[in-house]
Length: 68
Image (cartoon, rainbow, N blue to C red; front, side, top):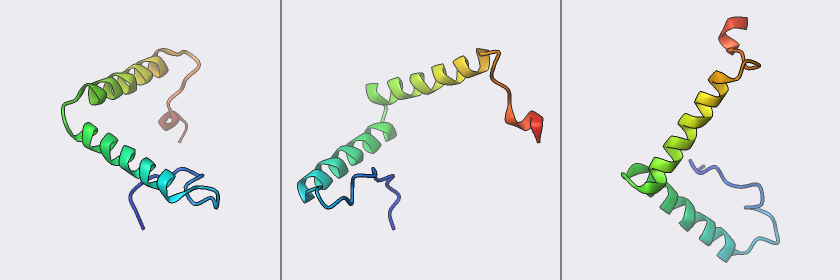
């Protein structure tokens, strides 16, 4: 069991150990960058905030809570 969100190709027979290792290294680096105050983290936070604002501003979007 792992807390990584593995890509669908991760356990394919044609995927090499080197491919898996490269992906795991990149994922660990991404997670570390998100824990620190890096430019990557700021860009990801800004992107998430922008997505949320666009969804809120879209008149075709409705909150699911209103229909429960």
